Length: 339
Ligand SMILES: [Zn+2]
Image (cartoon, rainbow, N blue to C red):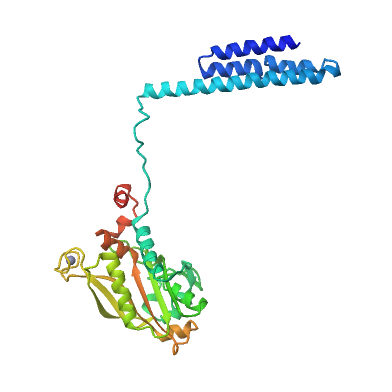
């Protein structure tokens, strides 16, 4: 039987050596190692052998199997590579050419958000996050927006039930930060917000905002103005000028809106800035003491400033876009420009 096994193995190795294709290799595998294969058959014969011969025969059959398997594997790999090369040659593929990898890129809104967070984080601000679904109080009451305020109208705000809504601004982050953190602190946060606006070139019912809050002893308007100036220079370059206009927000007192010199016309006046030479970039002000009181911070001890900006607006001015919808349509031809 030992000789028969050796003969079978020799035959198998001969055939493997002559094989020209991976298909032939597979046929040889079946012929010898398949269910009814010639080597497999020796296993079946073993049960008829006297017990004392079984271990030796078992070893012989196993080593026969291993020799054939490793020859199949080695020759199979050589043939596989030959076939692959032939296939590539037939298709005219030059595998030495550089590959055209269509790598993805960050969305311009994501880039703007990351840039803003980096700017503030590098100045010691905590990057803070909060939920898009929040309590009425966190979105309105604690920010000094009373029940009869027009911003709370069902036309403008998406209410979920009698307690929760989709936040209409990221200022809920301010409330959550103040209620969870003992001053002094500096915070920046970004995220999605929702309002009942129709979609047009400058509006969307879903948009992104950035929120900044600084609370400490002795914070003044000068700190707010310096922060806005530094941010504007970071976004639009050293030569940009800023101006603050008085405004009104329930959660800040006094409140301002900040403009930068139009980046298109550098202040001369153009269609982008409607001839004024200025572009509005954000709103802010000194935290209203009523907000401190509602959020458990002693308004006699602490002052602070807050500012909020629309990320789409910042991205549109930075990248010179005139329709906010281009930021949501995910047209690859548009997004490719921001690689
Ligand atoms: Zn202009």
